[in-house]
Length: 383
Image (cartoon, rainbow, N blue to C red; front, side, top):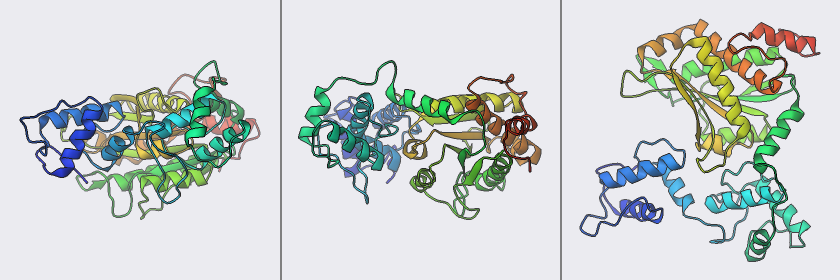
């Protein structure tokens, strides 16, 4: 489904109703309630901005799913693990955040009731004398609301992510990284002047994986050269691989030929839920690449795109320039530039695990430095 300005029909009436629930759209008794007019488009853009979605004013599958999810409040329905069609919504976010506050780990509060959420709920139920059935019904909900917080001193998920990072240590050897080249197969992504995003990102991903493997990391690609898994499938691949980090590679496009630059994205819904380590890694990669490439800074931003939301580990999406911009496209077509980007991303990952210790100024840490660091501390042999 895709609804945009000028469309009409019963589906638009449903969109209007949902937007009014969130006080984003006023009633128009004299107007056509089945018309997607300028007021609806403005309200959709406001909703998309609040939820960390692309603010295009179009109600596609992601925006409609977010509209539907935002309508659920904890207690509106019984929550449980549904394998074929996982339950999602703001009520699931509220449950996950409550479990975190009580000291149980459902993973990132991304709003999907998955196996980790079920296990955390069952542990809570066992500890508090409830039937450990993994169902969030009336009795479980009462207990969740009656108890005070156990985890204090900061946001619980933030504390857990930071502790996992500290325990991982500074060496790269053994770290499992999924590198996700965007699009692929019949989905070419952005295409400009005969240049396809899918091909460029495949090549960049191979360069990154090669360098990571040389340091002793367990680096793997999320897809093959001629395949294009869906975002949930890519997230499931990373989750099943028990990856430590995910790096998703894309380029952008814009109707304006002047649009250009570099941006990085991490999970963040604009309402306080965020991947703290993902945000830190996105910032490190952004700074390294800006210094090395002199590209325009389009900043680090939080989003709720599916890959960012569904992965259990910190995930960063890197938008390496605009293929629609002549200067960015020329850079991306240069293999030496792609080597520079690959090195910058690797160094950003290394800086994350160093936690500021034995570090060097931004832009000065090289691939050779990373290899030397790993070898000095018993890391992998350079290949």
